[in-house]
View 1 (cartoon, helix red, strand yellow):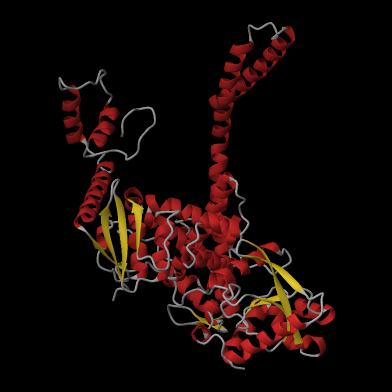
View 2: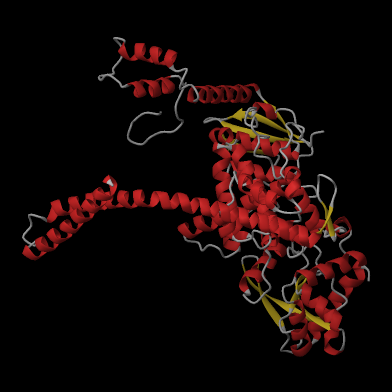
Length: 462
Length: 156
């Protein structure tokens, strides 16, 4: 169908709507700062175009081998087929949605532009097409005005998303890209975006908190982009989808370290990514990963029967100057990479191996240092095991240090509380309300403190 | 082969650092600059320049070095920014040297002792050895911090 043909079908459907008897179906939508009612028409389900620019697709499309084709000719048949596949793949409950369409039909109307591009109900359109019989040959859609701008379409998509709690949520990276687009393309401030997302009300404190949340999301996306540059091949954006809390913790620590010790910050970031790729997924586990994590990982890798003699290659120190430096950067402190390639090593070879495995999903992995091929699942489980053991070692060390500090911390706390007791006792001891009963209780507690201190002193002398 | 260049210059009062995008600088690099260096500043698709506070630029200069290397973006500084950066680099080297000069601190300690015992000095008490050592380190710096402390009525 040509572009003109599709527009004509939408126009004809609108004319049919106008000529039909009351009551005619309409749909109120948030539009241009208020609520506007739009006519709902019935179109054959093959007429609308799937929205290749939908924010639900961008994260998955970014890593798609035919991404350029979808970007260059989004309305061509091949691009539309790819979009349909991605929509099905990314939906959390596609089969359930399809069953529901089959049994109950389409409940809520979708939204379409005058050009016939779906703003809403893309996945439902794919489901109806697959069902394709009886009333499933039709889709009900509200038709937007002809002058709808891309920004208005984006705002509407977001408004429909946040007002419907049952709608399939955006994946994390879809949300990050959407926020980034609102800031970059539509010049929205963090406060405006927070309101659009309903993360903030108009109250000042709520707006500040919402804006900080938006800015944090933008910093997280920038950090993800940095990490994608670390590996060959680059990691797909969707790798980060289920890691919001982990990324929040990473971003906070990384940003704090970055100013004081950029070398440590880089090591921390790389170790975090390697551990995450290796399968250490929980926030709790990743909290144990820091810039010195290699010193825990190396011995565990060395213990492995198959990877032990490859640990040098897997954690090989990077050679200085392998990344060509663009002009001008040396003046931004040239001496902070002096110990970049020290005896600690570097996780870059391991990162590359894990990223290549994630992207290619080949049945075997070629381990550096001898070119031995290992079964993929075996390799992954060995790396995961070593990482988990290293995390356990790290936690055990922290706990041991904690246990050693415990008596000192407790005494410090006791001294602080005794100081407070002194000051509150001073303020009440001569008042009439601090009577015999209170004095008795005070003396009793003081005696207990003395006894405890005597016990500690005896222990100290032994 | 670089992917574009940033022109960096000092503008306005109080001084801000202006970054101008020239050539094929990647969007992900360009839009990360205000996010990391000047939160709240909106840079649009059409915008080719962004201003960030000098302090934030200086405190994030090593991050900028990393990210420029990752994205292969060159930097072209005007003379004022270059001088500030060179001075910052020099100060950093001095601090690093002073902090590792425990064993070589005798010379500085002597200088410091002379300074605090001179007729112009307002030091009232005799300082202990470790106090002289640490004071010598502080006096060796052009400045010790770049912030105001409310109530002390002066900038450190």
